[in-house]
Image (cartoon, rainbow, N blue to C red):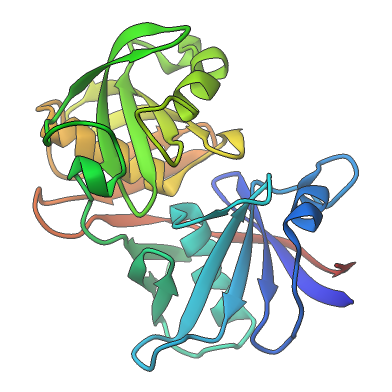
Length: 276
């Protein structure tokens, strides 16, 4: 079965996007892993699927699969590519798009300067809902991790779980060694994305993210949101933060109470057809 696809990226976090509104098909998890391979497949961090919504108050359903074939709840960079894709492919003429995800509804807004603003919803901070093993909410937690020892983290879900560590310099942060250890630590029963955050000043941070199921990526939208939320809760940041990732910059706004807004670009690289 042949399906048309678009290869896209948001700050170097790259995706294959497949329209299953005008096409029909099914992609098995093992086939996702094959397609994600950068030498023997197309190569991507995540596969994004556009589907018909299951409820009348939204425009599309949005499904996300990691490079290892596992399905996840949310992806901020992917959401921006999703919005660009459905508009450019004429699946909608709307510039404000409501999308159904595994974790609820998100709203995407296309701007005139080729940016996409994503209403990422309210951050989830209650440990059981992240999910994270702790008796009650705290801005910062001390946990023991095998192979690392005691470390302090912030725990935030932006539809998917994130652990946020503060480091002095992201360039020398132990992302490759600590990322896998934290990703699968038992305190996070569904595994976790790991953010290594360097605070430059109250409105600027640098960030590297080790994503569960994908490894380190050039950018992570939900990771940027989680880092800013955690930084504000821990008193290091003020509302309105530019997040510098290896692939580029995102602007994150959170008033400390309501939804987190993320602004950034989305770009199409090429289109093709693949046998699934």
